[in-house]
Amino acid sequence: MLSRVPAVDPVDALGVCGGAARWARLRALGVSERGFHVTIRSGVARSLPGVVVHQARLVSAEVERHRACTGPLRTALDCARSMPLPDAVCVLDAALRSASVTEYQLVEAAQCARGPGATALRCSVAHIDPRSGSGMESVLRILLLTTAGSIRSQVYIRGVGTVDLVVDGWLVVEADGFEFHSSRRDYRNDRRRGNALAARGYALLRFAYEDVRYRPLEVVAEVERVRRLRPGVV
Image (tube, rainbow, N blue to C red; front, side, top):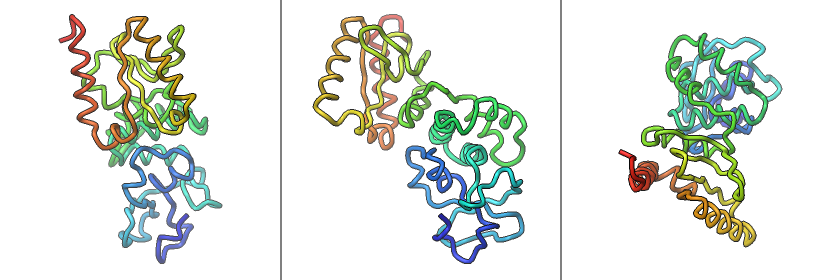
């Protein structure tokens, strides 16, 4: 994992944030675009070419030495300290889904956090949702915080099944990853679900990965436009 890090002892340089998050299967949308991150033990080194360096004190329980990276909890916390809120929450929700980190551990760590990034960490933990079904859904949920009156995740609707997000009790918002919507069978099922939602009085908006990652402001604006079509929504 540290093969791209020159002239640093693996005992002193530990993959963190984007690097360790990939190992831990906690990858957020866009993490791979943010470069290779390592944590350097205090006093070892201050800069490395092509690497984003973080200095910190680590206890042995936070380190997976055989993998030369931080463990799941430390990885999640470090990501939450340094990433934008949508990506940070994406990682934290993924950590909860993986069962390698508990909600109690995250809340406790946020309450005790001090130093650089502590405020960002507390903000990220305040927005976690153990019910989140995917990274795309986590990011989309955070994007909609600025426009939605209420947001519920993984809501079961009779005759339809479970939907990603329900905004204000009537607007269903789905994050469509290609992996689960690429076959003819998936295509037919998506149409059936859409028709069933309409028959029950729900509106439906669906967004692809490219929408959520590269056009977030347009996604928020479209949700806001649809919300305003419902009488009583200001």
